[in-house]
Image (cartoon, rainbow, N blue to C red):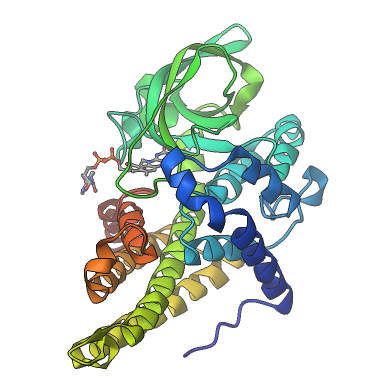
Length: 379
Ligand SMILES: Cc1cc2nc3c(=O)[nH]c(=O)nc-3n(C[C@H](O)[C@H](O)[C@H](O)COP(=O)(O)OP(=O)(O)OC[C@H]3O[C@@H](n4cnc5c(N)ncnc54)[C@H](O)[C@@H]3O)c2cc1C
């Protein structure tokens, strides 16, 4: 196996503490959370205390100013344990960077320490019932009225939404200007006119709270605009490579875990008086999966190294998002097959991971959109 070289002993110490935290605070409860449709709110505060949220945020705003490998460790450990209900990465690695990169000093001081401590849970609301891949088709509007923006519209499929205290909302401030009329707003969940719809029943990721959002004459001070008016689309394009990297990191971690479960299972399980792992078909499938995962691991780690240098470009991030999530789904499907009927039983981690994996090819930009992005860079 090709050794991983990016992580220092400090990263590995952090990994141990994250794993212990998750084994203690999440693993015993995840099944209940799947039934509840969300994780316990207290998990967020405990994670904040343990330094697991927004570790990259500068110390001036309560963070540890850590490099992205600390975030990677959190994503990988959550992925390995199949704890797909936990939306820390969306909060830490997707929402917080918007505030850090585009927020005013007052917004940073007000919100970032609360994100680090887990006092506030966050979400980002781009998708609407009629606009997912084509974000230029967003219909939610924000109209300036004196010192306030008035927001109207609705959103759907929003991760962390049920527990969210703060949502970054994508809205049109100039509907005639297309992408250039799109802006981002910080909207607190207790703002009058802001309501959450039902928690959506998903095929997998059942402990992840995903829901709808409605805005009816929601008034926010004009200071809640994030960055400049009309720049929302440009900001989204800037931040999406990191979002896609986080999805790829989780995909690889999940595929690696599934391969390990399948190795363990097929060594134990007997058929025709021998271990399933002894059939040539099983051995070849395991060998193929191990090879593809190794190829993916090297690619992801190379992308991580580029990202640490601020050099991960948009097409490469699209390649890694589409390829790693396709790989994850291929591996999970094969692993279910090698578990036989038990692979289809919810109590088996491999069954859950298989159901959880499917959406990875859909969100953060569908894999078809990823191919469009890659193709645009070629032709
Ligand atoms: C569990 C879950 C969590 C999510 N979390 C969030 C969140 O936190 N915040 C948020 O804003 N959104 C979130 N989403 C929404 C997600 O990002 C969208 O579902 C996704 O971008 C696809 O949009 P859509 O569902 O409208 O599909 P559509 O855009 O309608 O796509 C339908 C099909 O058409 C294809 N297609 C569309 N355009 C093209 C094209 N130009 N070329 C080729 N094929 C194309 C797509 O690839 C897809 O196969 C989440 C979704 C899910 C399921």
